[in-house]
Image (cartoon, rainbow, N blue to C red; front, side, top):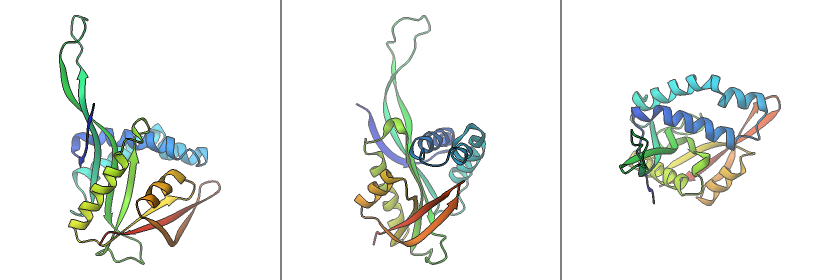
Length: 196
């Protein structure tokens, strides 16, 4: 049985965070038009996302900008050099999800009171194991420590699993929306929750 947890992302996690984002987007955002999704989550975009995650993890703009990772730890077989059955096992840790947050930037929100959940993703092979809930809870814990009383996030209206997950955790849509041109109009809605 694997141990699970959430911790601050470390520089060694940059590649795993990037790969997790791309896999999660390809799966979760399959409702988006093909070309924009390819631009967002294709191999050509990997270098851009890797640089952005490295900057976010290694040199965040402020102490209130954070990246958290969900991890699974377990014993993994170590191959024997002579090809015999493995006898040695060691503890391995795998990044299986991520969350990032920062002070809210929407002009109608006070960035001293409101934070924004920028990213909440779980690797498609590790969903329904509680990683999303652990990431969300850890994020809220950090935000409370930083003195925030509310959190917002932007979600594609068609991303019904994420909407259902956040609504079940007490989030609700407010009046704000964005319409993105992705070859067709794609609506995003803002969700908000009180963490005071």
